[in-house]
Image 1 (tube, rainbow, N blue to C red):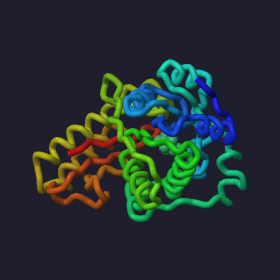
Image 2: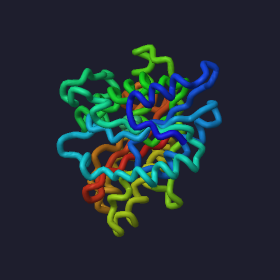
Image 3: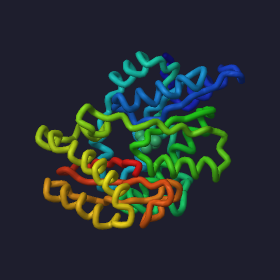
Image 4: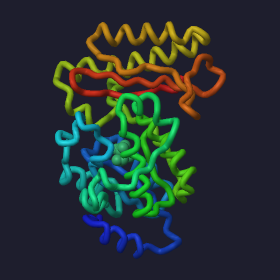
Length: 279
Ligand code: PAF
């Protein structure tokens, strides 16, 4: 596996590929778990050569968030990527990506979809995501790129960005990989204390059960969601949001005549968990 530690190394490697080779891409922030490896596995089936990136993107973290504490496990990540059959991994420096600093960098903003859910709770987060993803797609020039369905809002935002900016990359959405107790895999799960980890699956379970009840109840969505929220609050979660929204434009779902998902975010101690379930 090639380790491409600079922009120049990445560009050189990309230029060495034959035009007929279909390139698959899995962008990550490292601290890889089975969910990331699933991105590689899915993309591998649809391309001739797979490249991953590892870059903890400062632009998508708010001032009060966990940028400094974010787990960095490069050696272990490289071993996992190598074992998964990844051909190359791009590990740019912050200066490679933001040569004049984050605040002086051109930004990509996707309107509308980023005003709600995580966009409302984490101002500037999606601007950081879309800016870095547009850059990575421009540098790597993949035919197809994979993103996890756990971050469903992120997927919708990236799809819109790719469409609006006429970026020539197909976006593949990979189903959420879960622990055996149902908790969606996330690098942030590692922040949970022993007791919090034991409680965390209740979040995914409540989302799943609430989504089922929403599907059954039809018109009484708000009451069912309030009950789900109460279960989480009583158990010790601080719920950021629990909302049923249409998956095509994230508008509020007051009835279920269009494809709808239940989106949730909640703090357990200082750890923010997110998940979603299609209703
Ligand atoms: O989902 C992530 O890990 C990040 O948001 C991404 C897409 C790699 C951009 O930094």
